[in-house]
Amino acid sequence: MSFALADLAVPLVGAPMAGGPGTPELAAAVSNAGGLGFVAAGYLSAQRLADDLRAARAAGTGPVGVNLFVPQPSVAQPAELQRYRDALVPEAVRYGVELGPARWDDDGWAEKLEAVADLRPEAVSFTFALPDRLVLQRLRELGIYTLMTVTKAAEAEAAVAQGIDALVVQGPEAGGHRGSWDPVERPAAQPLGELVAAVRRVVEVPMVAAGGLGTVAAVAAVLDRGADAAQLGTALLLSDEAGTNAVHRAALTSAQFTETAVTRVFSGRYARGLRNEFLRRFDDTAPAGYPEVHHMAAPLRRAAVAAGDPDWTNLWAGTAFATAMRGPAAAVLAALTP
Ligand SMILES: Cc1cc2nc3c(=O)[nH]c(=O)nc-3n(C[C@H](O)[C@H](O)[C@H](O)COP(=O)(O)O)c2cc1C
Image 1: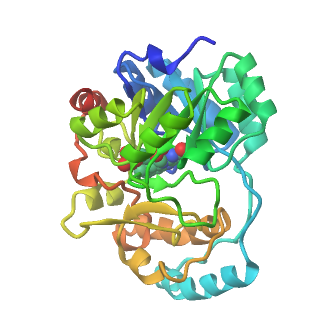
Image 2 (image 1 turned 60 degrees about the vertical axis):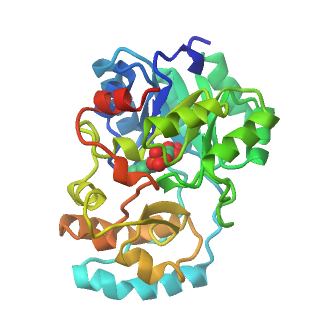
């Protein structure tokens, strides 16, 4: 194996951020600054993933990882999906769009695995579910370092037993989707610092801490509690190289949005974002069902972005969003390096 977390010049990981914010330029900038940059494969075609990984490599000199969504069996209940669709229709009508089909898919899992096997990024991280042992074995044989996102100590133990090389320990402060393996249960609320310490007590593999890290003191604190590196998502959302759309960028610094919440209104899976009108109106009624709800709500979210309206799209943000800085990603990393 050629890459290991301990080799990083700077103990920082640029979080994979699917859906636009993560770009090859951002991955390359993080990696050039001495951290580990990630290409987020979620929602992309396998071809586009391959293109993005090649672009990140071409623009950078350091290690680059790829993050994959691991498919799970459908948990959506048709009657609940229909009820939610009925509730969202008036909002879609206001934008003159039709809601999408509530379809399940596997996000191109097999094709994306082939792409990473071909292109061999230094690292591959997984979220949502634990991949098969044979998948991990294959990547290891190719010299690819594997990381699994976990949100509680029991997941950490299971990932290590499956043969993972390292963990991304994600706390409840994190922006975007929770990587909890149970797609229905409300995710665990143990704060990141405690979670890192709890995971460190049960497993020995290297560990990246993620969630709400927006100051150098917060980064130093998770390293002190046993993490080998810290993963930054929200802290990079306003950086020059991020592909964060203009509506999302503006919302992150607007006095209109003062807090975040964990909700499944946007995608059918729990995720943290700025508390906007969509979240306030539908948090009580949105059913479990990823990716069905994601596909259903996508046209509404897209139309809101096109219209410049922050109230009807997902504005992923971690609890530390108020400290996010503008400027080059390298400057963000420099400011957050203990
Ligand atoms: C906009 C956005 C998109 C994200 N997309 C992904 C993703 O594609 N895959 C993943 O494993 N995590 C994703 N995450 C979660 C991050 O990996 C990480 O856990 C989180 O950003 C850490 O919390 P922070 O945002 O407070 O730094 C995303 C987070 C954000 C903010």
